[in-house]
Each structure stands twice: as C-alpha cells, then as structure tokens.
Image (cartoon, rainbow, N blue to C red; front, side, top):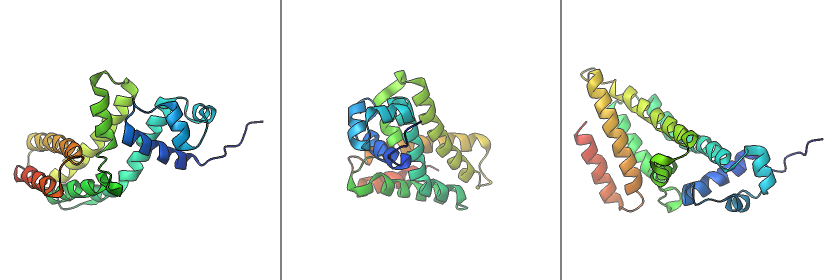
Amino acid sequence: MARKKQYIEQEVLEKAMHLFWRNGYENTSIRMLEKEMGINQFSIYASFGSKQGVFLQSIKAYNKKIQGITDKLEKSQNGVEGIKQYFKDFLEFAKEDDLSKGCMVTNTVNELGKDADPLVMSELKKFADNIKSLFVNNLKQDRNKNAETIERQANFLMNSILGLSVASKMFNDKQLEDSIETVFLNI
C-alpha cells in the first residue's frame, strides 16, 4: 500500500520556489530543499523525481505567483500604458517583503548562462515568451504600428524588463522610476 503524503504539495513547492529565488538553482542543494520544504529526500524524489523536477514545478508556482500582474496586462486595453503599468507592478512584485529579489526567471538565466540544462532553459524561455506575447498584444492596440515595429519594440521591452529586474536588486526607487520613464520615451 502506498504511503499517504504528509504534506500539501503546493505549500512545499511555494517554499522551494522562494529558496530557488533567493539562492539560485545551482546554489540550492537537496539538503537545503529538505530543510526549507519540511519534507525528506525520499519524499522529494518520490514527488518530483529530482532537484530539477522540484525546480521545474517551482517555475510553475512562480508563474502562478506573478499571475496577478500578467493577468492585468493580458486584460489591458491601454496599449503602451498597460505595459508601462506592468513594469511598475513588476517592481512592486520584485520587492516583495522588501527583499528586492528581482525576477526568479531572470536570476536563474543570469546564474546558469548558455550551458544550462536544456529542459530548465526551455521552461525559462517559455515563461519569457509568454510575457513577450503580452507585450506584443498590447502594442498591437496601436493601429499605427506595423508588425516589424511591434516585434522590435517587444524585443526592446523584454530586454528592458530583464534589465529592470536586475536593477531592482540594487537601485533606489527614483533610479528605477527614471529607467521606466526613459524606456517608454522610446515606444
């Protein structure tokens, strides 16, 4: 007879997500996950298969966590102003609990670089592609923009939000607000 789980999977994933967000993928060990999640190594492997499995599920938990601001952008009918508001909302999100953690996805990409596990990188890229598609949809609300301009501006906005994520870990509110205002002078 299979043993019944003594934990709620979403709760332990939330804890793992925060650990990866703080420490990074490479710097997080199975032992650290055991301690943070409050479950033993056997349970981690039985439920998630590996550290990679925990991380991939953590990306999904992160996606749910940020869903409030991505849903707002998805529903926005304000074009560029909707994207600008997303940037501001993202800054608030990145400063959760005044920890200035930036973006879990950006932090991981910076940490792992081009030699990252292909499956991990694929999930990170999928996350970024989703955000970019939201930018594209909002840019399309301006009927004066052609497809080429929209694509170029969406790429620029992606680079800008990634940079803002890193900057949020070290710059003050005024510097970050100036950065956002400057980005949107070019859109």
